Image 1 (cartoon, rainbow, N blue to C red):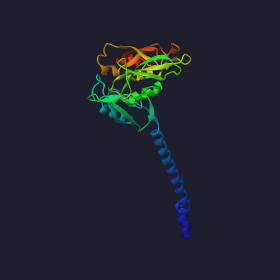
Image 2: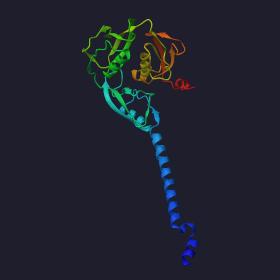
Image 3: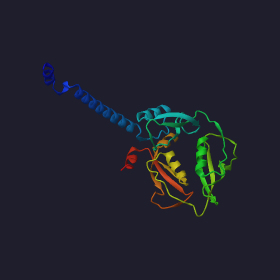
Image 4: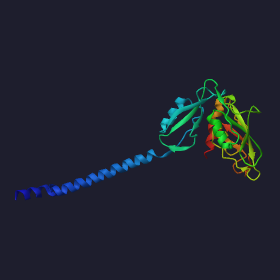
Length: 269
């Protein structure tokens, strides 16, 4: 009788079977909540973010801006660019504007304090894109694309430096400009102008070359007075425009660049 009275007094929780069932249900609920929280955190961790353009920043500036959004940076190479400030970021991989996972390390190539010599690679027989990548890996810059009739479009036929053909194995200063003679098949010779508005100077040059075109006239606003200024300049106008129809490979694309915040803001409208 006394036991029954205690069970009635304690209510349903006085039954050990019921208590265990309740505790089991609570434990499962807690596990589900924890799993949802961890899943949410994992989803955020794998969320893609846009890589900033670190061009012309110091390493410390690049690292600060990278860490703010969950990225890392490391210097993997250096080149020598006479007109650029020492130690500044010259190129990066992945490029600015690329989408990557949080925590990704961006590889930086910075401007060295003194010029260094590199070996000129053999680019003949490469595709234009392969040659461009090889030049970049050696710290050399792609200049003009000289198109001539050939069976294979964008096949490299000759390589030049300062208007003279340069042999593979030659020693050349890092940062030098290399022009390429490439093939052009009459049945495969059309391309389109890329959308350059909003891109910084070096990214715009890359986009022009990637579309088998040449850089035309560079029109810098009056406030752009140094090479470092030009690296931070943004394209706000181009000719031909993206709506201008197909172009013959090798055609020139002229751009207008500015650092004026007002003009740059207009591009996003």
